[in-house]
Length: 325
Image (cartoon, rainbow, N blue to C red; front, side, top):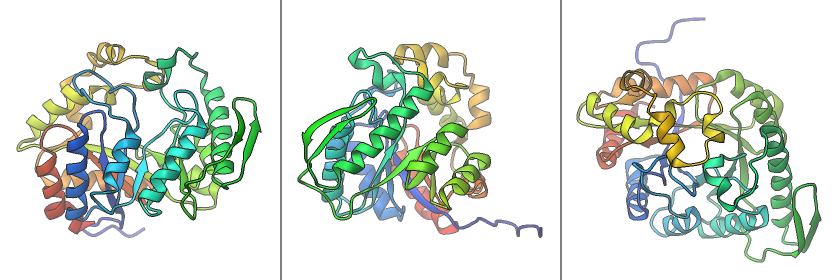
């Protein structure tokens, strides 16, 4: 294989990732408008009941925010991701996503996943095993698609019941459904039931597994940066707000409260944050992170900012990063 020329960057669409855990609704709308003006391709938006820690300090109801976004910008929007299995019944998610599709004139994608205890335990339901959560997700997606036919639906499944339900406000065609997967089993489920794949790490083996299992359907990813006047300031913001991103294994899926995440995140050092987070105003680390996701096989990457300098980050990407992708 021939060596890549200096500065080479594989073609990739770059979107902006709205973090509902860190920013208030008005800030999210400001970011959506600014992202469109800056030339970002589309928007991701997280769907949480709780933030990961109290320092982040926000968690608005995502469906209300999506409705507001539809009135202030014309970019496509994907939830990254909604859990349609425990906290919200899939029939309710089907109605919410259908309305979002109508408001966005067909530019809405429902991203779904098996969820985290942090958001899903709030009604007091037991937190299922990973295998059970994937079973529930598969049934939920099938039920959502059935409801999107516009027909009257009665459903008796292993996990969900619906009695004579019909969704009247529907986009045509219905939204696509992208499925997240952070391990081989989840990637296989995504390939089987999804219109696309969602992940947050440059993992070529999982992307390849999904692509092969799905016949080459699209794969999208999310990543974070900490833009600031200096890299050191950015790393300080990243550790203060997002140390949870450095937790290993399945902790993100099983810890139930922001307090638990704060306790576990105290083990994440500033040195570890420096090693893992792209920060500061030098374009090259930002471009290198994009390269890593392109090399892993993703078709689109959505970039979130950590910290208060989101206006500057969006302007920086418009001037220094997006033109080089």
